[in-house]
Length: 165
Image (cartoon, rainbow, N blue to C red; front, side, top):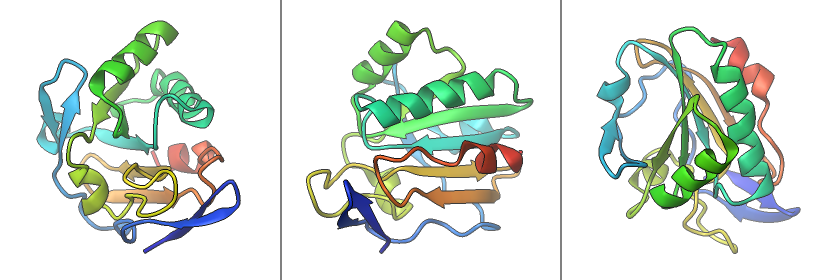
């Protein structure tokens, strides 16, 4: 389990992130049209998984905006923004912000993606939501970068994530 903080107060995750050099596990996440997306839908593409607690917080929204901006210049790369938010909230946010370069995916109702990747928050006021994580995957499904952001309120290291692409 990873120890992270929320406003400087310790909280924990359900496990450790998958290791760089391993294959990312398949997933089933809900798209904004309520259909289901899986890893095979993105076969042959590099992926940036921008994972966060909720689209309705300032830092989470900032990360979606930043990765949306970066995604427009990335070749053969798809940015997946993953949270436990309902697909309706994800769609509303991106529509209001005019964000069209990212794919929003929801890990509702069970949170199986968060549990499988060791990033579900297990205690504190955000228990059950995802911690702030970036996972980068190459076109063969191999993980090339991970970052578990130590303080939930902090943004991820965008440059480090994008540098491995």
